[in-house]
Image 1: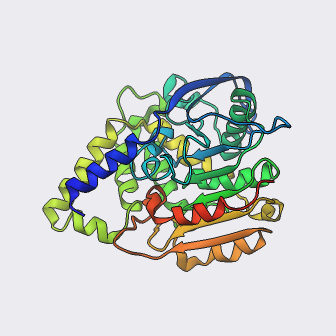
Image 2: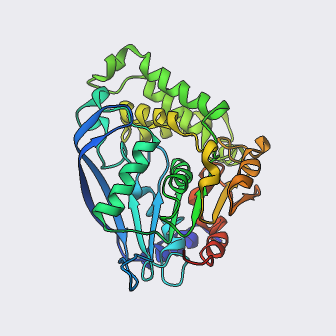
Image 3: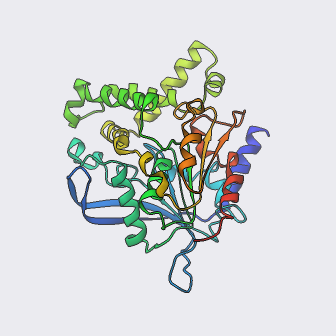
Length: 350
């Protein structure tokens, strides 16, 4: 399909679903697993559609979708994702479902270090993020049950935790681009590299910098390296000069929207992620989807296929490499996996 036509089709799909409604939910006296607390924790969110309850007051059409590290709910309101899922007749038609897209704790327009506390902001982990999401749904939006809980990358890791911590809350689970084990190996190494680069930069000044430390450039370059896949990177940067230009442009764009403390906190938050010991607690049908060209969760490790067998109703799908996959970023290209989502949604309500 010609590029111009593809763009026009994407715009048409994007226009077919209603615009998100945005809001903020403020949690009073939020206590973190670290022992720290905030008198007020703000969680920003976007919703599409309206909640519908059955005769017993149980919400039956809520869908929670969680974004990746450094992103926000807005990163999912795009043609590749929302344009394939939220329109009329699509798998998560906003006329049928109540779709909730939160900005995770420490991300987007939710409370985060760059709001003012900087490195004095509480050191949150994934368990804190899931707890904030749970309070948003149950107290803020009055959602007492979810038809589906799903997420991309970091949001996928949160999906595993949701299944363990609130096993009867949802009908189905769908983590996209994740592994159900403690962050280790290369996945930990690239995160540790970024965290240490920022922390050891004299310009960081213990988090109280007036301008972004130079190490943020290295951090953003590392994000470029770990996303997408080598073939696409070679296509967009086929010569030495073009490679330098593409990377420099990516870094400059990232510098305009990235705060070093926010990024460091977001990457460090994965330190308490370890769903492995409790996988048997997951009750809802779970469909985990990874792609074969994912550098962060490489299939040759065999971890997902091994561990998903411990989930009572768990299954894993590996999307093969093709000219349509995007490495780790395949999680946002719904055209690759939405038939599996449609299949999962045929599982009965619980």
